[in-house]
Amino acid sequence: MEEEKRSTEKQGEGAAGAGTEKARTGEQPGPEEQSLPPADFSTFILSLSTSALMHLGEIENPETKKKEVNRTLARHTIDILAMLEEKTKGNLTEAESALIENILYDLRMKFCAKAG
Image (cartoon, rainbow, N blue to C red; front, top):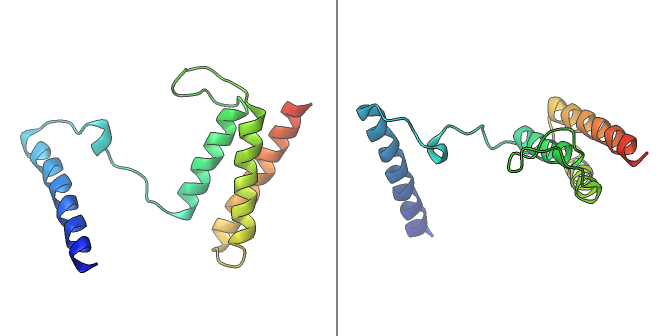
């Protein structure tokens, strides 16, 4: 287990070293090396929310550059968010609880509007 941890750390050092080398030479980092948002609960919820909005046709699909409606996938993503809300009840900060509650409300209203 300890060996596995050290191996992972060395891999991370290699990736970090590549980024600092490019910084020294003035090269711009590629898309895979750009800074990502923190991997926390709020970011995860916002990511799922964005997926649901895309499936509801509220925002365009980044691959096709078109607004496409897929109610089945939208409903599934909303259900995942509802499940996460239920399973994490009592373990979230006040801000996280408010975030997921508000996102679910907005997504459900948009889903109902699309379902007609």
